[in-house]
Image (tube, rainbow, N blue to C red; front, side, top):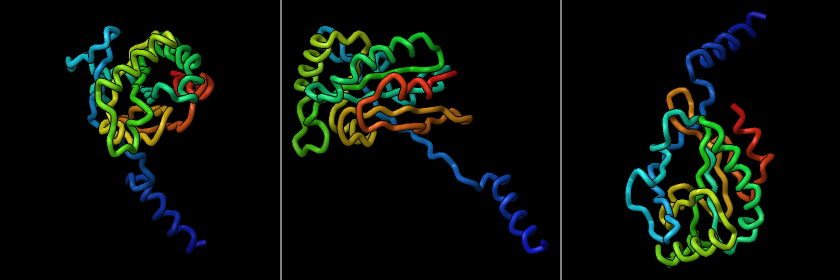
Length: 184
């Protein structure tokens, strides 16, 4: 019995001292500018989004990375529209749709900003997207570790107000995938 107490005491000491498993903090500083309906890209910092610039009251962040001409991205649109409406009604949750093109990921010659904007505008109009869309160029996708489309990342803020990844979907999502994570 004496031999069992010592290891348990040591284990308890590590846990109480904070040496137990920790959740990695995720703080990319990338800015994504807002794509305006007239085709312009807002250069104003207040019209951009970034992980570090999310309002203090937001505790859960849902980021959806998508591309036009991506069949799973098109398939998830009805669900994303519903998710956006639900999240808009909650003050502690935010939803950001971040668009690019299929050729923006892992391409030695990524598309121009103008090409991305053109494809996104056509997509937004064709599918009547009614939530804001932010622009992601190839290098900014790399900062977020995006490997394809669609990808949705659900982030939570910890006690120190730092973000960590709660869940990452590397496929299309549905309302059920997100609802369990946004209950507050």
